[in-house]
Amino acid sequence: MTRYIIIDDEHIAHGIIERYCALLPNMVLEKNCYDALEAIEFLSSNRVDLIFLDLNMPKLKGFDFLKSLSTPPKVIVTTAYQEFALEGYELNIADYLLKPFGFERFLKAVNKAISNTGITNNAVSENGNSAPATIFLRSNKKYTQVVLRDILFIESAGNYAKVVTEAETITVREKIADLLKLLPTNEFLQVHKSFAVAVRHIKSIEGNRIYIHEHTIPVGAVFKSNVLKLLR
Image (cartoon, rainbow, N blue to C red):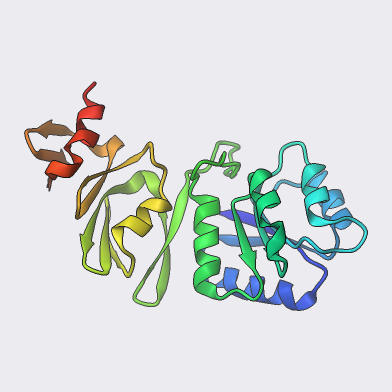
């Protein structure tokens, strides 16, 4: 479950983000805030996992609000002003959405925010433990939230990719290189032009073969050095 708030002084922007989030499982709206001061008051006694933050707001600007937080959650900036992008990345935001943005671009931003790609995952489960990092995958006009630690490997199939988990295989219209950009580099390793594996699930390595559960994954000559690093 990902709890989020929207901080934007435009009602239309709230509606767009809410509609997009409604298409994704386990996204829970906690609060609509129409200025940063309202958000500060809410966050003083409530925990959220993700903030959608506009920059040009009355009373307190978006980045000034962000700087006031001692331990901010994940933040996706939503703004019409591209010139502030550099400052945003210096503040370690998850992504920067330039208005107007479509759903596909929105989905990539959410995936970056929740998949723990270089940013501390602050999501917390009901029992107080850290919630597992996840990613949204689109397959057959449906969006499935997949726990990263359940992914065994990814297999390229042209312009598509098969994401193989312990329970199912999900075919998505994404190239393997694009999927890997959304995944933690220390947990997933490309071992062949058509295969990337989850390091945690490797059972054994023998010659140019990697064994994961009942699957045998080939090791390409170009990527063999990646595998050898695991053995040092």
